[in-house]
Amino acid sequence: MPAEFDIGPVVEKYSAVPIERLRILSSCDGFQLSNLRRGIVFVFATWSGPAIIGLQRFTKAIEPFAANSIDLIVLNTDCLTETLESELFRIPNLRPAGGGETIWVRDGHVVAGVFACTAPEALIEQHTKELLDDNRSS
Image 1 (cartoon, rainbow, N blue to C red):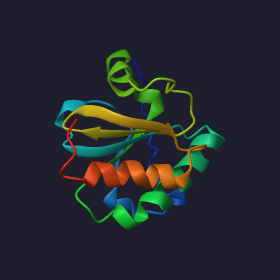
Image 2: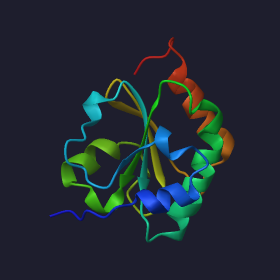
Image 3: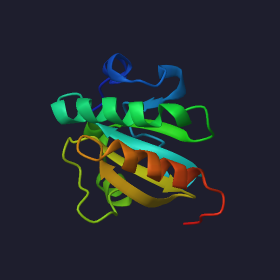
Image 4: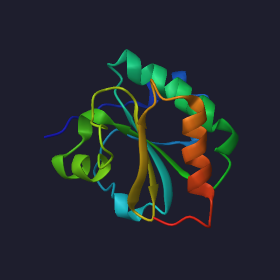
């Protein structure tokens, strides 16, 4: 059975976005990608230095957009099921590796993904702006 560990305190310590604005999921129970209209899923590993760096970089880059109507989800990597993993990781060369995998979702479909620990902040901002653009579709 996938692990459940309260990642909230670590997320709160390193996030540039107020904790109240994030949906922190220590368990994947009940989480369905198909329910996201506009969302960003940050796959977080508390045991990974690159994931912590990625969380800092990601939340700093999206801070100006945090007030918008985007679901901001921080998901514990250790709770990923095979099914959820296969739904989230549809971007070539993006696999769960503890590097702060960040996935943009529109209408239940993955539209972009990066490793936040190495992606330029400008790319994180670009994907977020594209997610907010009502003229784009999945």
